[in-house]
Length: 283
Image: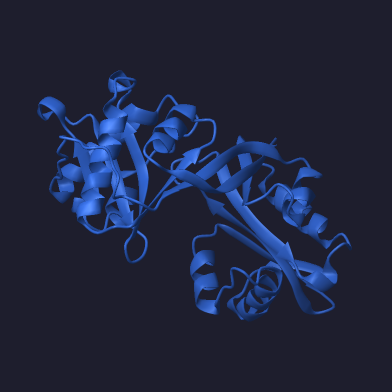
């Protein structure tokens, strides 16, 4: 048995293991390598000379105290302690970097990976819902008109409004100007709610396929919340998307953010999936 650094020659074997484990979400060598390029740590387990599994760690933008982990063991080598060896090696390698929390996401708490981690010190940190709206024809009317800005203004206003909307919440994950500039393909994808010509809210619309979009994130600055402006922003954004012939709109939300969940449900969104985040604090 050996735990060593990853090399590009490991990709084909890791892709084959991944696709055996998760045939419903297959990867190619290209997509797997693209994902690994963001990793700050990759270790490969070999047993009897064969690639048997791996672990990887990714930074979480805006949250330097949290890293996201991934990993797996090939079916033929499971239940022999190799997964525990990989995890112990990861914990040992990151043990001096405190405060730090390891985070892992899963669509169910009953998957083999989730059960494995929960037996080894991981616990549920939070649950996120994916909510979806597939009928934009029956939206309540709205007289609100949203604004868009040039690219520089859009980035500046988004950063200010995002911080003013979420800095007091558990789901606050700040953006850097560089991250927004790199991620914003078209400045017209950022919509702003501007009563009295003052920007107080935003909605970032991200195309995700023909006729499908994701709104991520969307917010109202704290002093304007609980006054109906979140609903106005949401309805105005949905009307704008309807005019653009969008037919599917998706929004992600923390399950404990009950105000946002109720708002989305009132507009016709329904939960279609959950994502659970397991965490373990280091140090």
